[in-house]
Amino acid sequence: METIDCAIIGAGVVGLACARALAAAGREVVVIEREATFGTGVSSRNSEVIHAGLYYAPGSLKARLCVEGREMLYAFCQERAIPHARCGKLIVAARAGQADALRQIRTRAEANGVGDLRELDRAAVAALEPALDVHAALLSPSTGIVDSHALMLALLGDAERDGAMFAFGSPVLGGYSDSIGMVLQVGGERESDLRARWVINASGLDAVALGHRLSGPTAEDLPRAWFARGVYFALSGKAPFSRLIYPIPEPGGLGVHLTLDLGGQAKFGPDVEWIDTPAYDVDPARAQRFYAAIRKWWPALEDGRLVPGYAGVRPKIAGPGMPDADFRIDGPSPHGVRGLIHLFGIESPGLTAAMAIGRHVAREIAGR
Figure 1: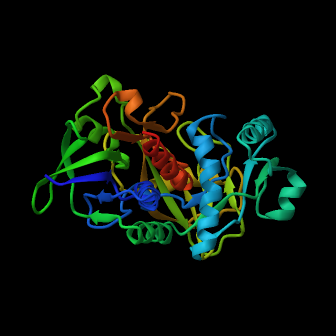
Figure 2: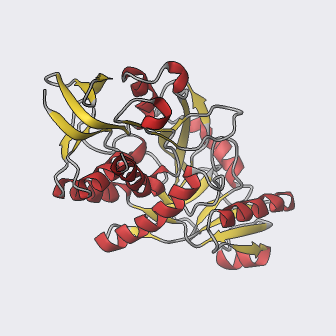
């Protein structure tokens, strides 16, 4: 049986970032992906926002890796001419009663090392974005947007340049540990076994289910997988905004917000709908909820301008009514299985944090 150094399961943005970091460190890397190409799951169904690091608990992996990853991502995009824009965003308090929530966001952001937020009153907001009608806002200059496909293509190119190999159309059916590392049972056109000294489970929505298929941690050691679908509606016609517009966060997400793509086209979303299994349908009737939410801060939005877009599913490890969960990067220490690293609950800000997650994983392996 062939033995390799590192096998990464999943070719989304996080798996690609791990492959790039490990290959750059001189590791032998094979990325195993069940789909026919890279980035077809969570990585292709999000807002493409580069987050500043405002919302996450100070000291958490989400906070630390978001802030680190943001700077790594901006530098990488500039170096490689990856389409992106540091356009900034406004977090808005639609009414006076939400002002305390804005202050709490600023306090948490500053604890995370984000020191460039500016408080704006109604007049200052109107001067920046005349279409908004809100009580106050926070301006986050470090928030931006990125072409996620171009980013993933660049990460893949770097990994291949440094020797990483990719096996597409190859679902991992299961695995077990032996005296050398882990043996993965890989399906596809021709089933085979592959031994790796290190296995990184970066399979996104399937990470918990795959954890059960790999030997080692008992069911009690693994988190439960929860799925939160969020749908997006596109805005027909030109948007009267030049920045991203976010409301006060809501349970399970950041609220229905406006994001812009690099061509200036606006979309709204995602909302939060807890579902049992991943599904990507968009019910046009959900637009009525969107109109109601958006008009709290953009009252001039006309009927008929929201067009069904697409849906994404967040790979959560905390469910309805629970506190938000941190990223879980479970190396051998928590679960006791040599050579196995699970990446659980890599939802937002996973895109922003991807390169920092890759560096974290590479350091974890280097330290063993």
